[in-house]
Amino acid sequence: MKKNIKKLLKDADKKTLTVYLILRFLVIITMIFQFLHGNFQAVFLCFLTLILFFIPFIIDKKFKIDLPTPLEIIILLFIFSAEILGEIQNFYGIFKQWDTILHTLNGFLCAAIGFSLIDILNRSKRLHISLTPIFVALVAFCFSMTIGVLWEFFEFGCDSFFRLDMQKDRIVNNISTVKINPDNKNVPVKIDNIEYTKIYYKDDGKLKDIKINDGYLDIGIIDTMKDLIVNFIGAVVFSIIGYLYIHNRDKYKLAESFIPVSRE
Image (cartoon, helix red, strand yellow):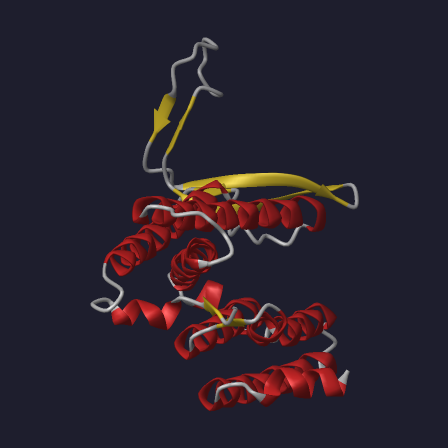
């Protein structure tokens, strides 16, 4: 195991390796701290993060694909920000836009990966295909959106079966629904300026209640749609960059910082 890890890290770019070692140190410290406090779910997240950190190095070694240094560093920081800062340090709760920023970045990164995969095939001498720039950009966009949708499926599954609340709930102060139409018609009843709602539930046979101020609790749907919308924005931005890059690879050199290339 140690030999395999050393092989993966041996030829890594010095900047990437430095960032990796710093983040790895922070994750290990966090893991020890969470273990001492008995938070084993957080310990598992730390362990998962350490595994995910190897993704850029595995892609480089096993698939013979060069990841640009800026892209490798962004991937490492993205994993750290999502798992350690977001979940364990509760940045999702402390900073309201944290989740939005990460999902936008995710859309951008996944579009870059999708673009590079089809661009590598498009430029391969062994394959007799020639795809137009607009088609390559469209594939990159579709790839990114597919990953975004699959992630939302994953969040919904975790919330349904493990009750984790990955699809963050939020308080909404207005509602428009046919469910409370007194005549059972397909006409939505609109209620604005909801001051509070109460949830009644039984616990050990006793009736209890929780008061929610300033509205009602939306169960995940707004968060899901917001995540997909910002994923869409990130995917569109990179798809445009990729389209322009194919048209003039010499002019749009900045795009190369985010586009993996094959060594074959």
